[in-house]
Length: 165
Image 1 (cartoon, rainbow, N blue to C red):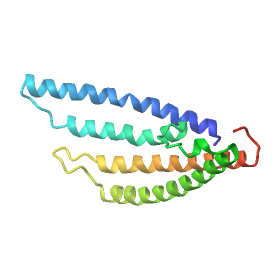
Image 2 (cartoon, rainbow, N blue to C red):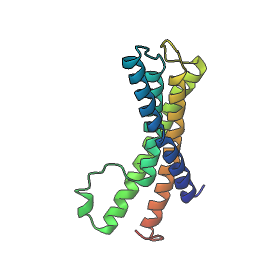
Image 3 (tube, rainbow, N blue to C red):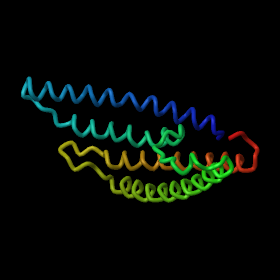
Image 4 (tube, rainbow, N blue to C red):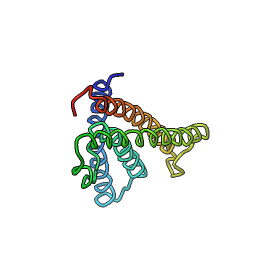
């Protein structure tokens, strides 16, 4: 898959997923009205709101990595020359790729166990939210790994002078 296709797919999923926060707000407002105005609290709102918000946070990782909008401390980086900056980006990409591969492996272990055991929340509803979130985290970690590999290829090409900085 080309870098542009991955970026578009991650953006599409990120934009779609961001709307889940509106659902979290709506169902939380519903819970407040039901609880305090009608004295009829729900048993499902809290669990669903947490699952939807967690979905947004998990999907947010690949979105931020794809856009390269993560928090950086660039005091040293900004003082480097262009060649040193290219090397720094390449080393960072190697380290990110190693981290993402290990993260994906760990996520695979957790998701596999959760799915095989049919892990559930243990609440009154007992939804399979832990298994869902662990599987989603595995997918997000795999996407991060692919993105990191694409970033590494780009950074190596920059080191060789094949693309602009």
